[in-house]
Image (cartoon, rainbow over the protein chains, first blue to last red):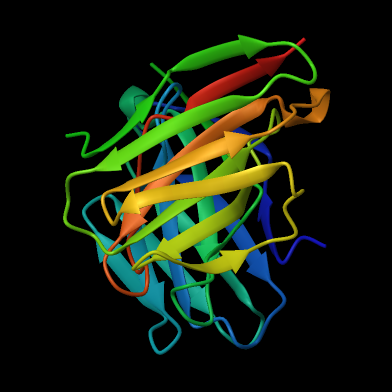
Length: 111
Length: 112
């Protein structure tokens, strides 16, 4: 049973466009939602995170929008760059010892 | 900058063999983890170790066993590999509860 789901599975955008990656979860106890970025041949790295008390978190070109009522969140990447091409994982945890990763979205940014 | 080091990068072996993967972190973290990433990129936690105590084991087959000599090292041994063990094994570390995980580059295992 996949507790954290992501869509789309893959996404292609042109350089300069906004990429929108979606995430949903089932467990109401989840209160911390990190997003990880993974390049080929490397391990995932923390990109940005949000707690359930907030509905928005921004860091440069990356913004998380969070809807607690609908158990949904999204990662928006504005002015997408070819260097943003990677797999993005939404994750969730009720306490930080049990991080559950989503299925991932593979993003390709074309120049 | 890589601070979680895994060896080897790749390993090819045959069904039934024993393999061992090494992981070392230089961040001074007190918790280390092993994750399995399959061909579809799904990430599943296998083990976590905090102060030499196993605190999470997510229904992993018994042929898998973590081995830790100190809080900076967490190795993974697979006693008798099977074809479904082919995957990338990622080591990670964190401080405290794991709010931020630092991953190594992974060890890709291919079982023939």
